Image 1 (cartoon, one colour):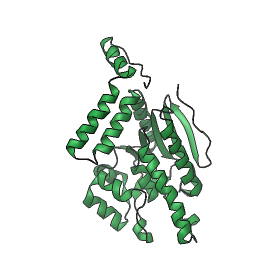
Image 2 (spheres, one colour):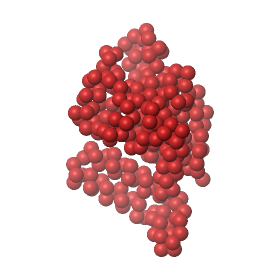
Image 3 (tube, helix red, strand yellow):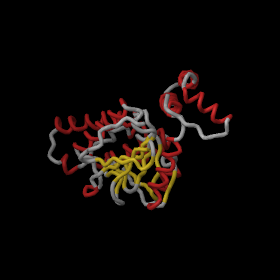
Length: 268
């Protein structure tokens, strides 16, 4: 049984479309799901709570309300007139929020249903992988506004598409299609709009059916290992592997295989 978490947020809609799958919907469709300060705080609160409640779900699907936008980035109408101190104070929330998303021990699938611009693109990149609607578009437009990506974009995008492609995307600020994003390695799967959420949820169910401790250790080994030398990464992998050995789930997995039945993993 999963541990309950806070379920009511002003700017987010939470649901459980399948057992052990949490769907998080950015819920400001009237503003293209742009992140205002309440949404930034809601995301920080939610993913902060999930970090401390890793059994609340076994996989997360993050999407946007409506069919027009995943997230248009920061709400620039709210930012109009902010002085330097106010701007930086608000941006501190974004910085903490994206770290909470990236550090979440539960796998996160971004289901990008429309425009993912600026901070919205960075939010998708902060997830473990991306499924996108065929009509979705992406952009990191910050340099056209006199700023630069500040929610991980200069770090996460090159890791997804390579340094040279990332420089072209960020330095021009030009939008690009979901098809291009898939071709460049940023998007895992391109899906018809009506099939996007069902596809993402089906994959989330496949992830959630596997051993939770194994899933968390794999996520940790890949994410942190890519920031190390090969030798250091392999040492991290073995440390992560050894964490799975004394678990009930490891014993259940081997037992169910030999008994030719589906395993019943409990996350311990």
